[in-house]
Image (tube, rainbow, N blue to C red; front, side, top):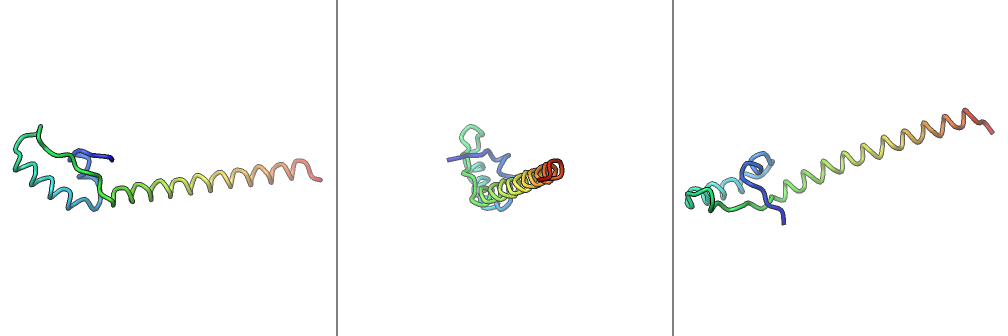
Length: 80
């Protein structure tokens, strides 16, 4: 399982509940050494997955276009 520090979790969308639970734990403990690490929220995983998926689709599209252009070029270069 993946854990983040409080500084990391503050930048994640939909992590309000995690931040509230962290702040109460942090205040009650009082020391930095005893603060609890927070599990990454589900929304963070979903956001990351969505970003990777969109990037991957864009890369595949670019490679498809490159291949199509290459094939068209070869057909024009060596007509049957």
